[in-house]
Image (cartoon, rainbow, N blue to C red; front, side, top):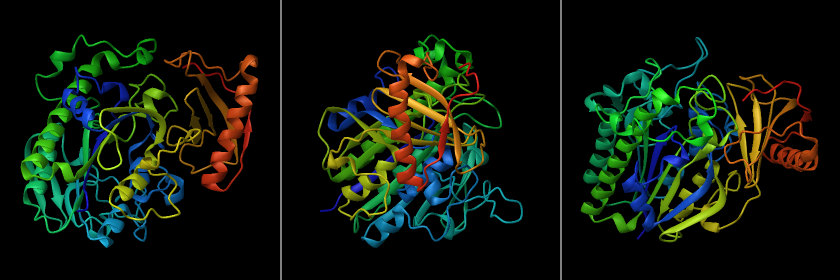
Length: 432
């Protein structure tokens, strides 16, 4: 019998929030699967990260290197592969791949129904392209696959989870299913400029310790962190409800479940917003997997990239992984040298994260897909400087390490983008 697959996706969740005080249910669930300690995003911004997940390639390869570029309609997606191989496919929540920014040239459906041809191949849909535009922490509306509007009341994460549980309960069982659940929480509410946890729940976290990789910098974490954690706690409760639904349906043991996020959150410490930087607070994400090919109660420290997850999903379903995919299925157990990261909107940047070091360059052309020339920005020794306080990019003592990291980054850029740009020494003073 083929595995059902549930991909549970949070938005802007830090790796260090997966602890018993905040996510007891996910921590307990991890005892039945594998907890990956070194998973990093391939692009720390919403749309591009989602584009990689749906296509199996890096954002520049599928053409969605910034928010507001719709996924080309002729792109073959994860859902297409699952559909072709006898799966039912469902998408619940935030899509963020249908609307375009170009005036007069792009379909704009941030607040309206998404045309069927822009649902990335999913046959069942309960969501919105930009969920934060159709709802707030409480109340809002979504659409189904036929464009029908569905109003909801109550806390948004609860209602999105309800739609996922409803799908599980109503699924006929004639075919296995692949369901992608894309929560908006704990992402901040854009039009209100704040995080929105469930009412009355932030008080529980008002004295919760601020992470050390934030507290030495200026940012808005003091006022924002309690609601941020309250929103994550609500995700944990909802994730537990979904797991309970799988068990009540009698299909839990035959279902692969993956929990992860698109990127982290640095609370305006590294730049003027919440992500789009090379720092661990921005790129380090949680990843827990239960299913065929994954050990029980295992903590795995090998480097994993978000771009590895599409191949992982297909392999879990015994679907051949396309040769053009940029990532490698985690089940293969291969240890990679580094995670390659593309950064956009705050900069046109490139970075690599090894277990020991982080190296980053940028061209300061935030909306460009790539550049012929980059300037060195950051070098961190992650062994002795876990909070990434000390930028070593101009350190003469680390010139050999920097040379090695530069060559490693250039090889990753060439492998992914087919170009070998110039990387020049740092010229700007970095203050964070």
